Length: 613
Image (cartoon, rainbow, N blue to C red; front, side, top):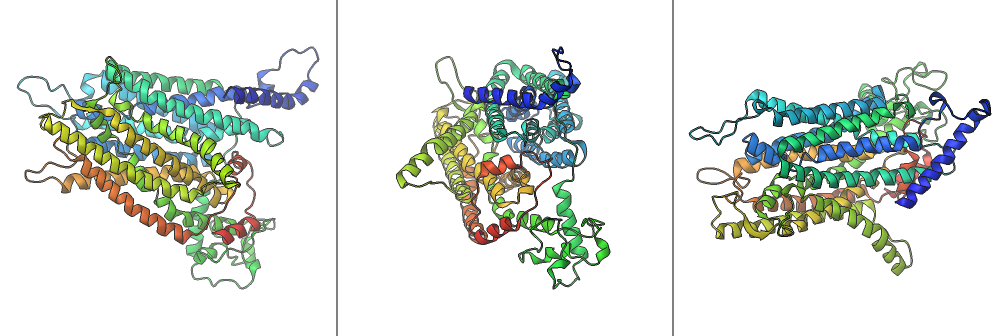
């Protein structure tokens, strides 16, 4: 990392010198400084502020989730299923709103304003959550008073809590989809021969800071909540979000701020609307009757999903201006727009296969209660907080990616005598299989834990400590990390390789959308399990009393569902066919600046996609 930072410093300095040469020639030779207004925008000076904004937001938001189940169950008197469902909805909003944020930023606000407003909303959300811990009347009163029943949260108290979650989700919707692209805008200078190396260094630092910030959140913030209570544990994230917003706005004079542009989502809607309007039109005989961009090699749509081709049929010469642009984009689309929507539709079945993994990964409350009931001591005087066991997922993910990329692939290539790599689809399949094994192992560990708890006489004591090391939970967390490493990275590379270059911004959006859908489906599954497994004299599988419930049955149910999802994945893979093999890093760097004019989809690119898929 030190070498990359040194390289970034030198490259940035050379860029600044190249950009400032014309200005220096115009100034007096006796001038020793350049006024702020005439300084070149972007560059290294903006990197600490952008990375600090993203990193502090991650520390604040990710640090709140692990122990939130305890806060909801103990302070708001919620059952574990109610608490987990609320967290599912919060996570769904947090994963879905970045999709909305990307649309709003690209079409109306611009990335700078979207990140700035997102930072303010996140700060307000963490502040409101902190106030629920600071103000006694903002939450139910303590239930340790003799002769008085425990009171649940009132409607106003519950709404205040949900309001804080909503504000933080809106904030994440502004920051997360724009931060990386906005940072790339500051460094992306196409006329510089070292442009690709500069961007690669920025991406390396950005992703490294993201991993470190999540680890700090899962350890430091969780530890503060365990040892110092909710007032400090929620107050620190609020302070961090204030600093996040402050640092971002401090560098405002130095940012490159691109103007807003049309959004890809509007293009999809236009194709659907126009295809429906033209549904009764016959297909043209001549290729010239299809509307395409000027200079584009792609002049005729493909035969797949043929009904969408009617969106680019020229009904009358008056529909096209002399410069080749449609008079009304809601009456006539281009061939490129139609093919972009087709490409998205084709990847959706394989996209849906990743939802089950996200459902498995979103089960946060039950591992938390398991860890709380087990021996978490590393030494006689130190024990790992129950909410920090998620860090082993991140550690396993990071180590596995390093070993896979730097050790296993080079070694396999050396043995085979040729480059060896797993295709994105194969990695997606491996991720599903490992996720299934993770749920299977989770059920086995819980079965052993529950049996030992009953043998110790803790059936009716959910707060009792089971004589079993919580380090057994590391195995399932590590498997989850490996599953995510295979699946998430495989999905991202799959979208980047299979979608046209102009749609590359959808790669991360599709991943987030899958997680949002998974959170909602996870809530449906949990509610159904709770409803159908409890009855007269029967305890729910997902009971708040961990030793009375059967969490292992719930885990095994998820494992069975994941196994069926594996079969579904194999069918989707067979139907999709082979995939395009391209340099993913090069593709990502080529589209790092979405504000620059996009190149048209070439006939050569389309032919390669048709031939291999």
